[in-house]
Length: 208
Image (cartoon, rainbow, N blue to C red; front, side, top):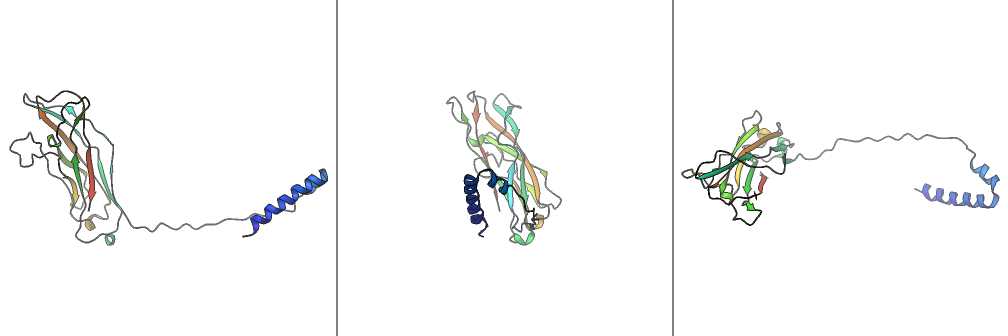
């Protein structure tokens, strides 16, 4: 631990000698007495950390386009960016009897020019699994209709937390580790809706 201070002091002395003796000291300072190599070895062990349950979304925005409108209802459709749930935990890191689930909630659609907002109850979705694995333990959520869908038991829109996908038993699917899902989005409004650009935010949350 004293090597660095010693080198500092020797350097100072050498500098002083150069100032006093000029060329002769310089010749002495350049003389070599041999080189020595030092091999450096390190052993890096695998990180032993608990696995994690996580969610990612392949994009931060999506756009809806008008399609399938009627004289009384205007409809705008699009797709939710792909949602991926990853679980790197081992079965013994998961509590028995629990499962994970992804929920979605939308804000109101706010106009860019002060036009009246379109409530989140006008936005619905139809979830679908892209890759649910082979266990049969992963399922998509039910279709959520909009307030414009009279007679539907789920005509509530994405006002509250609605199910996109779930795992019935996290322990049972621990070895599969990765699943993907999406949803068809549909915004339905009265034909009298104010024209203009609107924006809303869907918040996706992963729970277990």
